[in-house]
Length: 70
Image 1: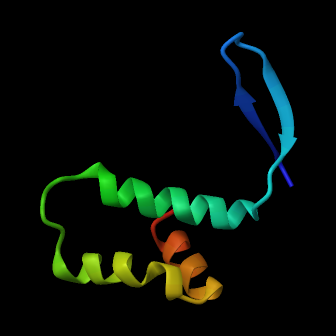
Image 2: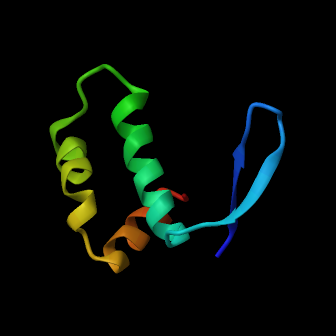
């Protein structure tokens, strides 16, 4: 697993191993970016994909990411 770093007030960073699967972290980050990136109304079909993203099988998520070149 890749390391994660947490900064402290002194500016020092401590090494801590990541506790989650990197793909799960990316999916969470991607979902959050999509939700917060725009205040405008998304097309209905895109919103449906976003809403169902956590429930999609990994091979479907991978196919969508490949199609979007992510």
